[in-house]
Image: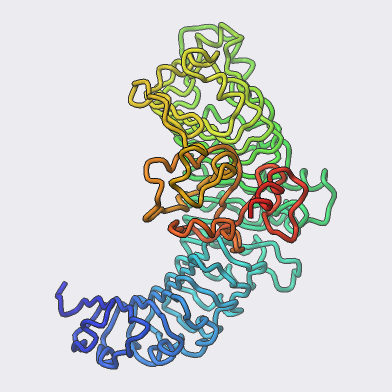
Length: 563
């Protein structure tokens, strides 16, 4: 591509260049600089990436560049909210791709629905949060739309009717169905004709959604669907009693049978005590499974899924024991005799358990000698993560025979003692693993014993004027999805010293509060959030750490005393 067709401007340099031949322009005008009118000479511009830092640039910009195909608007500090520009967007009649980054308007302009050629609409909240509450009523006019993505952080409760007309959709993230007014809300039945979907997230299951409505979605017929997220409503948002809610969730999940070629499945907020939909074991192409925020007392039998590579369990509230039922071993298989070895979890590479608060036992098939000879368990397992499982007592014996390369155990006080090098009861089960990290410290790396890493104590913390024995002793910053990046941080290699049990969660996907007031003395700590924003939650009382509403929890009391 010719250099005369592509331009990048991110300073005062080049603002007066001739842009008549420009086709693709990446534009970030310094706040103090005057907007270069010479840019408007690019009458044939096809791509514009614009980082906006003033309140008056966009209104003028939208009167030009009528031939744009790709538009990315990044609303920087001090930028005007999008709904102030509602009449101008329809000028881009040829637009195929529209992406809004750091978008902070509470609505989208109705005129956006006049962009009949639009194929991709992507709205990212960025690090500023997302106020978006309402979608345009005319969304059904975007008949060429293929990808619609709102991300994780938004405040929309109801989708307007008509999404069923967008039959070209490949990505729909999310599809919200928890509206309470049947005359206005978009129900699951509107998915019936969206048979080109490849990625789908359904949010708001339960509440006003029932089994019949779930069946109307006919997910099984969407043969191209490879990624599916099913998100149920939270406790307190339903009108029914506890038992009815649990039964409803189970029926809805069973009715939302996906196609057998599904590769990724995430289930969140499921409140029934068991998860055994008729279709679970038929997902023979499933590669990744995540179960989050569930009330399960036992996990579904997953050991026979032939291509499952990654399994993540996060916040499983009622699980106490994990046994052979998890492997998917049937009674008839236990009694059979022969030389055929049956693999369980034959392709599982990564296994993760996080915040399984009441989990105490993890048993394999050690008690039954015949089973040991007939089955091989997790023969390809590479990574095992066990985090914040306070009651877990020991690891299963079958881990001895797995080719594990890395084991991480954090916030598991009982298990930590049992996994101590040489002296721990479970050490023989894990000693073959090359990389073992317990409580944030490597005890074995690349197959070699690691020397005890120096810990920061009150005696050597004086070099860090902001440090206190309370921080070093009690605060744990748990980083979800790479939320933290450090720049010019004074600790250097001793950063691990702050990652000690056990205090705070920084969790993505929740509206921003002034979460880091307690870190005001850490002036050189730079936080960059890549996935939405976060809140702070005490790991004991599960309360958001807001001064007005903190409970009598010991940890909450400690941190507010420190502040």
